Image (cartoon, rainbow, N blue to C red):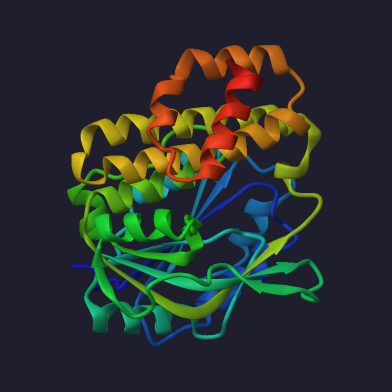
Length: 311
């Protein structure tokens, strides 16, 4: 029988040859917690898989598949992971020393279903840092619904997957999976994670460094339309979930309206096919649903602007 695994770490990679070796070795240097590290190479063409194969450690699992996107890669790993807890990392970021063990100790002590940690936004040279979030209920144990209410009310929605440490039994109990797509579906994962209403705990432990680079795919001009389509899908799914959850319905409508702000920013300044994008938005989202998310004068002005641009 296999030894018990405390934490599964899942890293989807695509053309990450420059960074993946360093991150994998840093994770595998931790020896005080039982881990498995699942790297899913999603069709890389730069030798990423070869670099991982050169690292010999029984705790390392490499899966190579044709390019299907980051969310499909995470689903592949989710289907076979064995750890009591699961963490999702990005291949081009950095972690604090003892990252896995310290998170595991905190999660074990607090016995939550979902732990939300903190982190740093940083530039590629580590010259600039700012905290990922500042308004969370640090140290409190609260339900997923309470966390949604807090995040929406404070207008701070920390949906980044690398902030999270999730109990695997909670994932399986609620059949949580990533929805297909190319961008922004981590928002939906986090919404469903919280809507399932488990025990949440947020700690102001800044143990992760999210490195923003100008060469990232999200900054490519040919990717803006993809991102805009993903936002439409996210907004439509949040609205649908609101219809199914009366206790948090109002807050989900409010969250949908916030994501509509992000969509409109892309639409006005970045999207290429504005006519096609307008039609896609109107085909998937009713203005009346977004109207239900209005909670301030600022929302009123934004809603009027949205109507003028799209409806």
